[in-house]
Amino acid sequence: MSTDLTTLTGDYTIDAAHSTIGFTVRHAMVTNVKGKFNDFSGSLHLDGGNPSASTASIDVKMESIDTGSADRDGHLKSADFFKIEEFPTMTFRSTKAESLGGDDYRITGDLEILGTTRPVTIDLEFNGAAKDPFGNERVGFEGKAEIKRSEWGLTWNAALETGGVLVSDKIKLNFDISAIRNA
Image (cartoon, rainbow, N blue to C red; front, side, top):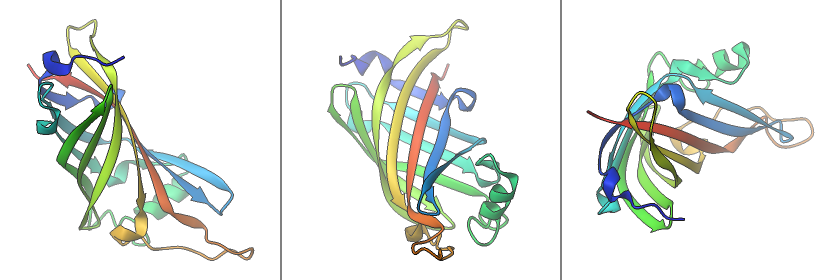
């Protein structure tokens, strides 16, 4: 069921306490490891009458990576992967938004990791809008994208005795976004 978004036109701030920016990566060719970033901020401009005029901007603190393993998180923060001392933030800035019909949207933008900026396309589903008990007008979106980490210079790996590599090149990104309309 499609929602009339014209009433939702406005500027929103992402509510990080009720949102998730996560990822899944194949490990040792046999299992998936999931992780997320615990510290991020962002904003949305929604234009319900003209979805192509909508925009999104997100800044992620790389030191907040959380895979449930302190040793693995430490390795990801190191020079082998994210080099967080030199590159403390990952950013996304939208360049294009489009309605795909119903509650489905696609947003394309520039993802910067390790000082390298490349385009990424995120498929989104509008999950709805509501006024919360505190009087905040909220919107929710769920999204996903796939990237190849090597395209951002994330190339560390280790060969496995049985063939293949320890960490896949393909990364699945997932987003659960709750945003509050600005006053």
